[in-house]
Amino acid sequence: MVKQIELDWSEGIEIEKAFFPEDKLGRVRYATFLTKLLASQGFDKARAEGDQKRNYVLNLNAEWGAGKTYFLKRWSEDIKEYYPVVYVDAWKKDYSDDPLMTVIASIIEQLRKQAGKDKDSPEFKVPRKLIGLLKAAAPGIARGLFKRYVGIDPVEVMNADNDNIGSIKGEDGENLTDVNGKPIDMGFAASEAVKYLIDEHDAKSAAIENLKTSVFEWVSAVVGKELPAFIFIDELDRCRPSYAVEMLETIKHIFDIKGVVFVVATDTEQLQHAVKAIYGEGFDAKIYLSRFFNSRYSLKAPDLENFLEVHSDASKLSGDYLRDLNIEVLPFNEDAKTTLRNISVVLDAFKVSARTAIQIADRIVATISNMPRGSKIDILMLTTLLCIKEKDHNLFDEIVSGKFERIIQSGDSQKTIYLSDFLETYIPESSHMRHIEMHFDPQEYASYFKTSPYSSPVVNQYTSGSYRLYLIEYLKEILSSHFGSSGKSRSIIYNLGGRRKSPDQEQTPLEKIGKALTEEYKKHQNDTDAQTLGVPALLWVKFLYIKNKFESIDMDEYKDFVELASPLDWMGKDELPEID
Image (cartoon, rainbow, N blue to C red; front, side):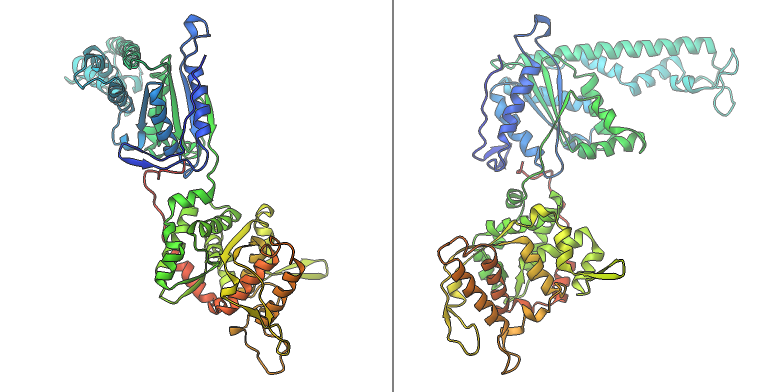
């Protein structure tokens, strides 16, 4: 019966002087599930006596940003209480050319500490015989010794072109000679080469068997812990291709030790590229990698809202920070988390990768931080343009030039596709009704509405709260209009200052919006939620655009914001803690 273990990641912890925050994605349930799965695969008393212990290799697959390192670090740290555990950061060790010794050194050091033994403890000494056998098994060393004592390079012998029995010729047709310059006798060379290969194979086999015995002894020395032992290999996809492939071969052929389970964390797609770098583009890397793993478990892509909260400098989007800079943004939210949530809604709609999401968030923060005091900016508009710039440079240029327009020919008729229509099909329908939030008090901006030049002002009855508009309505009514491609006259929504162009003009745009807000309130006066959702929220954004002169930010300014910030690329650390 597998021990029932429930892991708890509700609080942050420090692991090896690095802080790992609480689990905001609910990933702990995956770690709990996998612990039970691997524990039962590696050791089960219910199986026949000779089959109780098994070797098992799991590929933990996740794209960059899904938090593999956070996941493995917290998981491996928590189960040390129950099982012998080893964690290997392959990328930090790939300066070494020997994956085998990397794993052995990590096993000895970490299991020794878990067993409470000092460095001189005999249980955790590598046997001299094992060291000798491992050295003998190393092809490069064995080849050198063979050449030194026999006088022949076995590789030259095996690659040579044999035209006659008496001597061996190289590829250039010349007779091959030994180290003393004498022609090599074929019979002697063949005999010695075969002996060399057999000896090397025997030495390697003996070394491997001795190593397996030693590893299991080290595992058993961790008293009070149950089988199986867990060995976690992290960051393999970031290693040199040759090192990554050698590590997999080492795990497959040397560490197939009963009672030991491996968890190899990779971005499997990137690892396939590494394999192809070794074996060629036409090589089937997917099938090749499947040889090394018993199963694969894929972590889902991270939720961008929580992801950005961890990886971005959210403090620079807070109300306090913006007030200190005297920067006005729309939609404004006192809480930076709400602004990040709005940004993540746009990023999700444009299906950007986790890495690109961080880059865009950093560019937004950098843009705001470097704006002159007294500046204004629409964060949603900036985010949308940064996404479009990443996805399609030509489309971006069309939009910021105010020249976006597509003509579709249908028989004898033509249809004009404006940006508002285009964006409706460009982003997935599942994102259309996602909410954009704006927490504000309408009374601060208008205690009453003037709805026409002749009527009396109407009291503004909207109250402070969270106003939510739909993303698709923002893109069609605000962004598309700002860039002159909504299929409507820009002056319907925008007019500098909202002033009357002439004394006989019936309504200014601001008066039109005030009238629309009044009508919406009457329509929903008994439904508080309806007063703050959808059309009323959109109308308030339009009202603020005119009232606070956000419409004065012209297309060239947004183009400059994006083009100045776009070269800023987030390089990342090893992999930031969290999400995972």
